[in-house]
Amino acid sequence: MQIRVPVGWNLNFKRPPRASNHAQHTRVLFLDQGTIVLVGIFVDTVRETGAEWSPNWLEPLKPKEALPYLKDIEKFCILSSRIPQDEKRLASARIALADSGGGPSDFWDNILEHYSAAFACFAQGEALPRYLDGNSDRQLTSELIKASIYAVELKRLHSRRVIMTESGYVGLAPSHVMKGDRICIFLGADAPYAIRPGSNESFTLVGDGYIYGIMQGEFLKNSVLEPIKLV
Image (cartoon, rainbow, N blue to C red; front, side):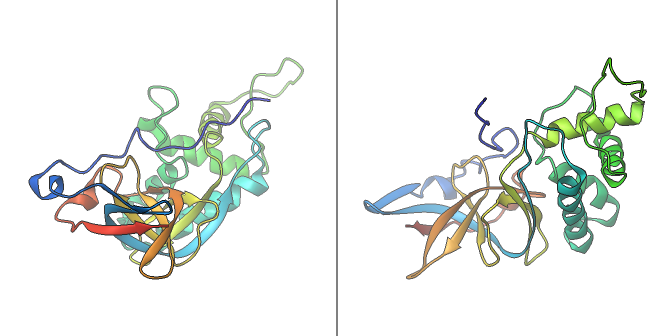
């Protein structure tokens, strides 16, 4: 059996600019063998968590697994005041894939069509992706092809959970994320991270994530860097 590739977001996240006010900070300070201090920016706190996404990548995606995941993303996007009304469905389509960057060359230009086709197929009980099968008389329609391409990209993700923060950011975090976890950006990191508050103003690392609306460096403008202690 092949080993699954770790999920990562380094193709899309823009690092903080090396401005003078950032350059003066030490990035890592080792206090002892079990404690380090990183410089970063607190983004928000996780308010709600939704469906887990960890499909069996060796089999077609089952509707009973895919629909709750897609529906929770749509629900959070609808509730979010940070996502414009005319952008909510597009945001849902992109968040579900964490802007993975894969797919055919024109996939991202037409992602909403692929997303809508996949959503409709899952709602009808259709497992995806579907391929040409010499033993089947079923015609592979253009809508089924679009849905299957989207499903292939969905299968690239695993061990994720849908989240919404207190101020309305929507995204994905590791499947063991919990309400109350903080979202932060470490100086020099390739992704936002979820961290869990502990004692004495310390945190434990939950893992990297994808947050719609900050992956292009939008949150970094005029943000204040702070020391973040991890144990």
